[in-house]
Image (cartoon, rainbow, N blue to C red):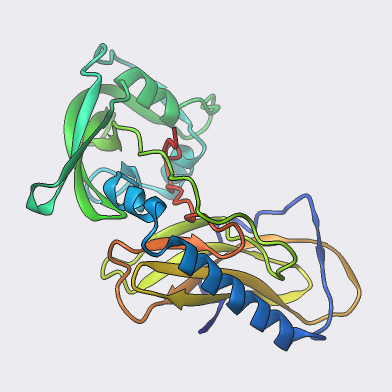
Length: 293
């Protein structure tokens, strides 16, 4: 299955990479596709039914934002950018140390216990950017609460810190427990297989029928291409580019969003990168990256 980057979708930021993008022709494209397909099949075979897959399904792995905005969202684009830039200041006091552990709960009563993150540490993950003379958000306090987060095992109710914001009636919520450590992959990185690793998962649709990832787009290429191999236990994504120029490209590469449609919902299947053989990390739009320790 081939999915092209949607030109209408907003970029993560057209992030320039330090490396120069290499651009070439289509010579050997058929062989490249076969090599990529073989690699994806090897990754799926290694993961399906493995101890790593069992550990993944037993843990808590956020697959959606670990920060939730106040009801109705922020009031302006400037405040959204302030949150992304960590332009957050504290005018008030935060609770002291709370319990060491918190419980993550799924439908049917399934649960797992994870270490808690204190209110001060959670706030520091939101703040730290320059706020002098620029639009910023002001935190006036926090209290313990809960929030619902998309995870690798479906929606879960998770302990959270509820930060009160100046000018808002509803709080900004941030997950207050760490993610489970990633299991040791049962297969290593690819060697000599064409293509590029995928940077991260941006989102999984509410119905689980599509996955949006960040893929490398060479400035001299026709855009990123992501192929998918679905099995009973995994969704293996392979990133590559289609080239339109011959020779070396002296322009820098960018990161683009690509949405991959699936034959059936992700469910508790592991979303894997074919090149690394590892689960593709899910990075939030706001706040800290999920802990992997």
